[in-house]
Amino acid sequence: MRIKYEVSAGGLLLRRRGSSYDALLIGRGAPPRIWTLPKGHVEARESTEQAALREVHEETGCWGEIVSRLSEISYWFYVGKNKHKKSVTFFLMRYLSGDPAGHDHEVDDARWFDLVTARKTLKYVNEKRLVDLAVEFLAVHPAAFGEPEVVARAAEPVS
Figure 1 (tube, helix red, strand yellow):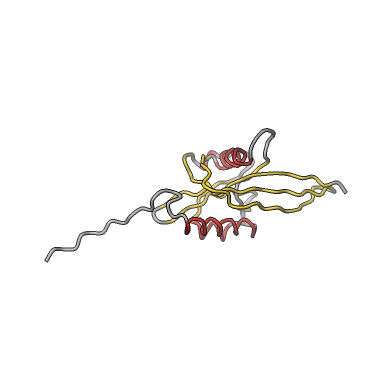
Figure 2 (figure 1 turned 30 degrees about the vertical axis):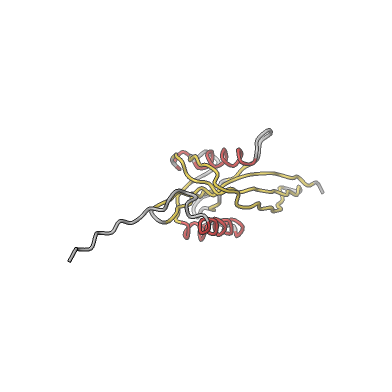
């Protein structure tokens, strides 16, 4: 049996919303959609970081910047009689600009979800774990996405 090895890269793109975060997921297929993280093949002469940024932009219509490497996921699958082993390096990314409506033809939908809903919505357990890793990273590095917004309180009356 022939085995084909594939190398891909992708990202968990987050944006700050008040004191919480939203994650940008991609959906494929007719509703109900299969929701996943954006990812794709690393091209010749391209680093995993470059591929991750490119794939996230192509599949979501949004630009991000890499904050940290999250993890690598490896899995096996079959296409016909050919066995494939795919390794995907995922990065935690900070949203910079763009509109999810600008996603490419390979994706049927791209949408922001709060982190709790994103984790529940993701199809694959390994990708749910990436959300957990991102939450752990943010707990240790709270300023990684800029300083959290401070909620202003009204001053107490002077007596």
